Length: 465
Image (cartoon, rainbow, N blue to C red):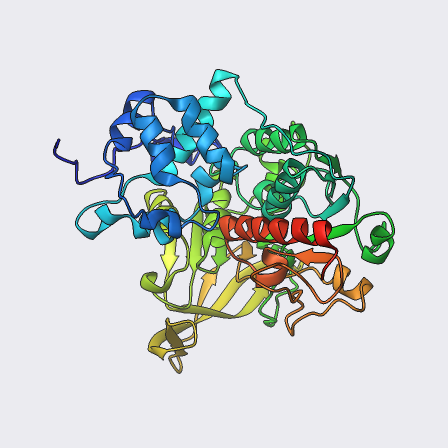
């Protein structure tokens, strides 16, 4: 048996000096030779723990074996049996906490680059121009509405269409994709790739209707008069703020608004797209997750002299992906750890100019398992800022629960749904993704869409709730 390289095959990417000046994708992806080299590191375990670590249960050894044998067409075919969005998952899924974490190689060396190989197979298919559309089941005559064209809704819609149901996908914005188009920046997930995946879903037979706000244009109850079942996958789009003194000053954004303006409304392409956005010189982003990294790195590309991450814990506790933190560090984002904002100060025109903060220290672990941050008395200091992005989380949009009185919701406004079936308190209505769990990962939302599709198909066949 050939000796296994202990490290993943490197993926070439733009240098930090180059990429901070553009919004192009950072990694370039594998060549065919590199993909084959990486695929050959896979041990082809008889009991593949990696599959158990994947929320959509991809046949990981199967598609990797096909790549190792240079049968790229079969590799993407195997992938798409379980995942209708492989080009997206290969780029933004936290493989290090899921499939790659379970890889047997990771006990003694770096795991197989499963995400990189998934991205390669999807990109190879796009470059080849040969997209196979699977045969649909016999049409059932059942009509299904999907509310929200984000990751959960797209997967649910794709699965239901393949099962022979007539599927209509309703999206409130003018573009489908949800967080994939409005939240994740171009340099991490190019919009052309998202569009390519959405077109594939449409080729499966899904009808897409944009600029349709369910709860306003039509309610869930009104849709139930036309459709046999409904899936709600509207995500978590209601931003959180900290309710600090001065938080209503100009120049203070929610991460949602900041990223929507840049990503979906293409403010970064000014003047080609005349979308206003404050291009601050001293930008502070509050938070430690992927959204915070995306915001801070976007600010840098929009021309900030200094882009900072303000986080109340230490680097160890940051929830962002290791790769995203690494890229931010390479790009010279300034990290202010163990720091808590408490007040903003503005100039005579109402624009933010300073942020007052406290120093923190870490105590015992809290409910999240991370050490609890505790303020240090009399440790106040100020940071000059002209733009602040608040990226501390978000809740589900309340519109659908407010207009659907018999839909049971939790105390945070999330729709209550059975995690094993996606069924809600309302007959014929399923839900999944961030609208149920609160803000989580793309792949977990996709997994919820898949679970709900299986359950919905069973309900449409039997009529049993």
